[in-house]
Image (cartoon, rainbow, N blue to C red; front, side):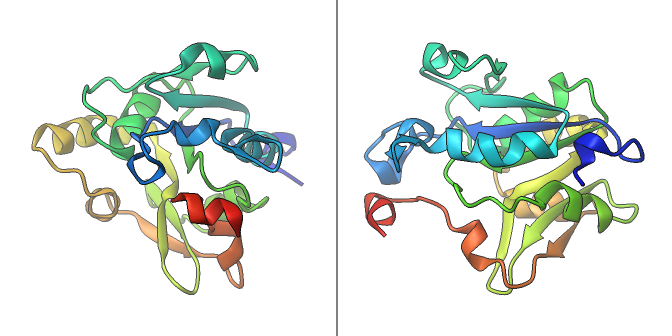
Length: 194
C-alpha cells in the first residue's frame, strides 16, 4: 500500500533536490552522474514516484536534460546555490498540495516506505525527517507548505542549517530501523565505486 493508492492519505508532492554545486564531485551536476547505467536522479525518481502524488525536480542547471523525462523542473528562488533549504523553499512556495516530501538526488537506495513511514509518525508536527540508527538525514523530510514564510525569513537572516530550521519549525526525526544502507548517498567519486 502506498500513499498514492490510499484515499485516507493526502496528496503529497515529492521533490528531488538536484540543485547543488556538486563541489565534492568536482563541480559536476550530481543528479546527472551515471551510476549503474543511469543518472543518479533517475534511481531516486523510480523509488520516490510510487510513494507520492506528483514528482518535481529542483535543479539550477541542465534544465533541458532533466525536463526530458517529462517531470516538472523547478529552480531555486534565491540565487547563488544557497543549499538544500533554497530548493525546499521553492517547493513549498509552488506546491499545490498541503504536504511536500524532499529527497536528495544522490540517494539511489531511498527507502521504498519513506513517505508512508514519515507520514504515519509525524503526529501533529509540521515537519519530520528521517533518522537511521547512525544519524539524522534531514534532506529526506516531509514538510507542510505553511512553513514557506518561516523558511524564507530564516534564509533572509543568512541561516543555512537545515536541521536547525526543522527543529525550530517544531519538527522531529522519525527512526527507520536497520535502514542505514537505504540512506547511503553518493557524495564523492569513491562512493560510486563501492
